[in-house]
Structures are given as C-alpha cells and as structure tokens.
Image (tube, rainbow, N blue to C red):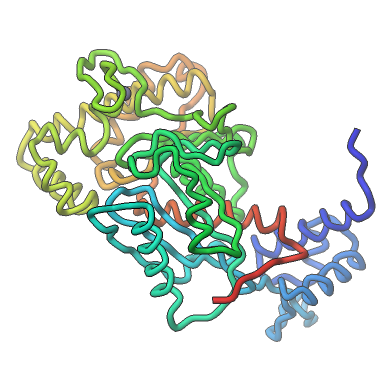
Length: 398
Ligand SMILES: [Zn+2]
C-alpha cells in the first residue's frame, strides 16, 4: 500500500499548478484555480511559493477578467536550461540550450574529427559547448543526450550503436568528464522523437508510435502515455525486421531481408549509385536532389515508391499488433513524404486487418531531424526537472 502524506499532496498540487502555467501563461490566480481545480486560497499560496523559488513570476501587464484588472502569474522559462546533445549522426554532433518551455534558445553543430577516439569526441563536445554558451549567461540543470543506439538503463551501456566507437560504452561516465556537476540523461533517438510529439499544449494521444528514420530505423513506443522500452531497452528496434521479398544480406547482422537493407535513404542512394553524393551533401540536400531526378526519371520514382511500399507493409503489422491511435513518421527522409505518403497509406490500409474496423491514422512530420531530437531531449529533461529537481535544484552556471 502506498502511503500518501500531506507533503506528497502539497508537492503534487505545486507541480500541477507549475505544469499548468507551463502549458498556458500568463493566467490570473482565479483562471489558474479553475484550470487545476483547486481552491483560490491554495493556488494563491502555491503561486507565492513558486514565485519565491523563482519558477514563476507576477507580471505587470494585467489581464482583464470581466472588466476588472487582476494580477497575472507567468511561467519563468529562463529559470534554468537543459543542454541537449544530439549524437545520432556519426559525422557530426549538434547541441542546443533549451529553456523550461522547451524552446530552443541557441544551437550549434560541430563536425567530429576523422580519426575519432572517445577522448577527441569529448573534446569536440567541450569545444562545441564553450562556443555555444559564449555571450550568454544562465543556469543549467541537466544534459539530455540522444543516441542512435539501444540504451540499457541498468548497465548504462550503449548497445548496437550506429557509431561503432560508442558500442558497449558507458557514455554518461565519459560525458561526466566534460560536465562533472550535471546529471546526464541518455535516451535512444527514436524514443526522443516520440517524446517530441508530446506537446504539453495539446492533449496527447495515449497510444502512439513514432517511426524514426536516420542512418537506421527506430521506433518510439508511447503506450498508455508512457514510453515503452522493453525489459532491456531493445523495444522498437526496427532495422533488422525481416521483410517479405527482400533477398539482400544485411551488412550488420549477416541475415537476409532486414528492413535496413531497402528502406533507409542510404539504401536508396546505394541502389542509385549515389552514396558519395549523400555523404557529401547530407540527407536534406540529397532528398532535394532525389526529388529533382524523380521529376524526369521514372526509375527513381519507382525506387522511392519501393521504399514507401515496404514502410507501408511494416506499418500494417505495427497497427495490427499494437492498435495505436496513430503512427507518426519523421526523420532524415522527411522531404520525400509528399512522394511516398500515398503509397505508404494505401499499402498499410490494404494489408492491415485492423483497417477494416477502424480508420488508420498516419501522420508525417516535416521537420529537420536535429530539431526533433532537441525537442524530445528538452521534453525528457523537463520531466526529469519536475520529477527530481523541484523544489530543490542543484544548478550549474554558464
Ligand atoms: Zn540485419
């Protein structure tokens, strides 16, 4: 049996008011009391407490409520920042300062050295961080990292990393050499992409999947509003799922028919003999190049359509196994979605048994991959902030 103390209830109410102000700000105390369904007196006392902590503030610009002026309360986004670090790509790192409202305040990218070692990678992260925080001041509360690997929370070791340098590495331990006084949160990139869609301003879908395309293919599963990782963190590894009619041998696992041999942008580039163009120009510019070729060359359209069919096949299986409210697609191939969307939807509807009963929702996110990871890592950081920091906060100045 769980014992709920008065302190627990007080803290829960404080977090409720705080989260509500994060979603909608400014609000008068009366509006706030209605929003969180607490008495005006309790809300008023909580607001004073939050103002004392510096987490919210009273604002001068009053809000008119029925013709009468009342003091409003506003969320203090700049109270503290998370440093979000996107390590999904093997060629570069990206980092950003994200405020408590999950807005990206400043970001920066750095190409990693060619002869990469863990030491030179940490040095690259340190230099990038110093350049990022030049000319700005504030307080950090954690470092939130996205990696293209399975993260085992118990052992803190990365497995099946797309960057071989990170395989079986305790990344948090290494990052502590750069950020000795900050908590380090590590998460798989597809899970962060799923987090990025949990917008506090919109009522979230309780059961949704995010299929995330990078150099590999990941799946972020939100089940009953919670991230599902599986017992060892391996849930949602789609890259090695076996597809019908695919006879290619996977260069990573040695088996035949893995999804990663025909679906990612890399596999399209390889089939069209353009892997160097993809490497040189990056995924965004390569998609533009593909779209241009697709205008004139039917075989390019066919190759892209083949990827779309295979994605549709996998989505049909995911719908039938998990019955989500929606599946969201995003990643480095987002510019191709206008070309692939119909085939993906049609194939999925044709093959899914569930489609006979319910309308299958598939959404496409047209956003650069770094922004998705920044947003997701920022959201994860904020959850950590309210779960473990408020109201006692160990902060580090920059
Ligand atoms: Zn494989």
